[in-house]
Each structure stands twice: as C-alpha cells, then as structure tokens.
Length: 130
Image 1: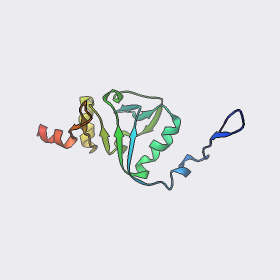
Image 2: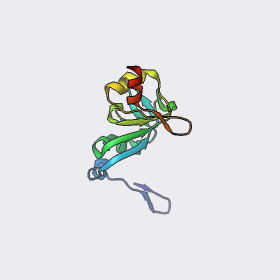
Image 3: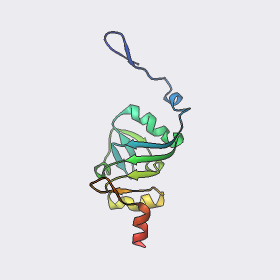
Image 4: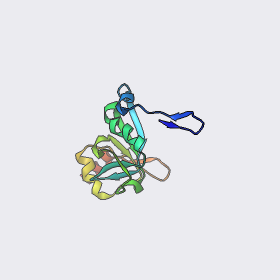
C-alpha cells in the first residue's frame, strides 16, 4: 500500500498478486515491452508490470507484443516472461539471429514500414525463402 502524506491511500495491492488476475480473461492482449533477449526473454522496468506479463499467457487467448527494433538484444531491470509465451510480435524489424527462433516457436512477425503499414509477415518471409 502506498499512502500520501495527507493519509490518503494512493495505491493498494493485494498481498497475493495472482488474486487480481485469477478471474480476468481476454481474447487478445496488446502490450509493449522494454527489452527482448533470446536468452533472457522479455524484460521490463517496472516490477508491477511483471505481475501482469507473467500471467498474460493464462489470461489471453492470443498475446500481441508491440516492439520497435531497438528493443531487441536489450535487457531491462526485471524478467517478465519467456519469449515463446508471445503469439505475435509487431515490429519494424529484428536482428537476423531471431528468425530461426521465431520460426521454430511459431511466433508470428508482421513487419511495419515507416508509415506503420504491414509490409511482410513471417509467413510471407518463409514463402519468399522457399
């Protein structure tokens, strides 16, 4: 619980953070992320965010992660989830070493151009390489 100097409660959290996620269900969850790493997974700068990200795979039918290319190979303070927990990463690009991982984990990767229009999906990229 966080209380201000005038005695008003600004934020209160249950002792068991899973209690507020237990009954939440969504078809599609859209989130951003602070860092993506092949070995360390998804990382964030807020400990509060870790509670949400850790339970998203059980809450959402499909998890869409929105990340600019500068988030790849970047670590932030807190581990939030495994990279393979995500169903789709919407991005403007990613390092080539991620391609095999995305393909093996069946993570969908729509690529955006500078006008935020989808230019290529993982399926398109795989067909082009065949």
